[in-house]
Image 1 (cartoon, rainbow, N blue to C red):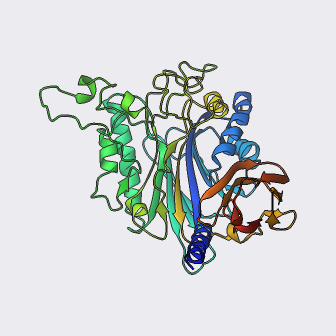
Image 2: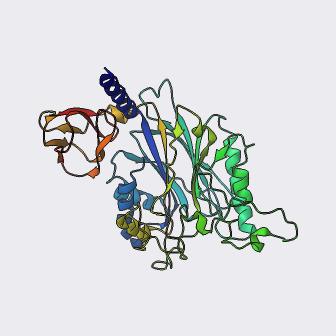
Image 3: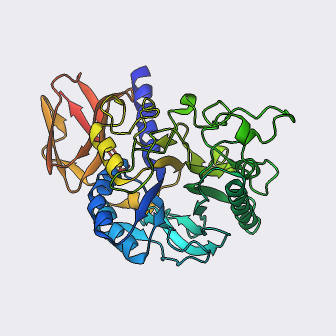
Length: 426
């Protein structure tokens, strides 16, 4: 009786997990991506990166023009996921017209409702209003307000002030949407420290909608010392008061290179945290849509490449050499990702399962699967809900899995977010 109860509980757990939908968001500074041959030649590396990350929402900055956006979309995004759509391209309404923002999205999970441009003194803030493409979105819509920008670069009080003023424009936009809105704010913010006025006003708890850093990694607060003058000039930029410090090496996102590559991009190695995805605080507490703890990552950063280039063969770890090579070649920044989850199915989960058993579901030494499309992840659970087999990115149409070492019993095979298949090992 106890075994039966455990089995039913595990089956319920697996089916419940299946019913949940994750939205992986990714922001990336694409480094002056234009219609020129150099940008086109770099696109193969972006394709490698996207194939590894598999985002549902892809936000970028430093896009030169609409032709560049179309080329990137057709040659790097669609080959990875044909269900992706691109937001309407918007020309700049701010003085800096050559570096623009854009968003691309998985239409199986997201519906783009509207777009808006918020001009600033330097570059636009682009707003994208999404609704999750859930089975009951008509009667119970879950909406996400997404803002993407590129704040003014460089040190100095004038540049800090420009970043601060742009953040005020964003906060003004927050005042115009419902206070319970789910919000993502992504971009190359160029903040050198959480002590900057722009970052401090952005994370002020008194804002209409409280914006937080999912990983909560502030630098040390400047001491209250009136005798030193400007602390930004007084303290070393590599001190604990700035993110340019080895203690933050695991979240640095710039620069992937020790020196400029082909005359483009910054050098200096990995020592700055310029790229962010921030979010509204309610994504920490709401049950309809919520942030997945520990899902915020700086893609390619193994935490051991401080002041070096990202493809350095000594910077080994979770992220492969192949991926880090592609990141080095494509941009001087690293992508940022984070995931949200809803307990409601998106319509994409109603599709037929792309995987099936080639023979009977009673097996002995092996099981053979027929794949209708690429599976990002194949996982097999035993009756206790324990993972006994896992494989990523299966490209074959017929996959044979060795089950000779499995104990006799009932198992569940789960491909991506589709319903699990049951089989029995004799």
